[in-house]
Image (tube, rainbow, N blue to C red):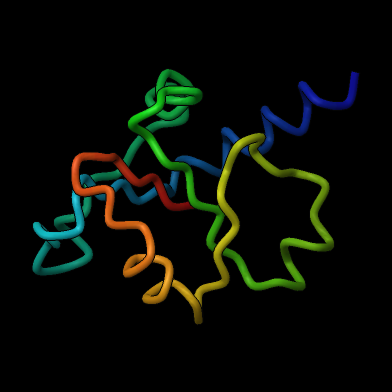
Length: 96
């Protein structure tokens, strides 16, 4: 089955995730942004208060077979617009 290896690859890539809990309390520096393990993210998948954001350039996204089901795709240059249009203050946003 192809889905399991793809999910495994993506979960491995999720080691470099950035999780933001609420846009109003932004960290002062990148070092202050919490990092999540693939196990932590795996436990968050499917929860209604968690938004997984695939933040890649369009070419990378289109050429990739590895995508997390349910993730929202946002190009990096449109991220500010995404934040303005999705003001779920109590949601946890996981960026990868």
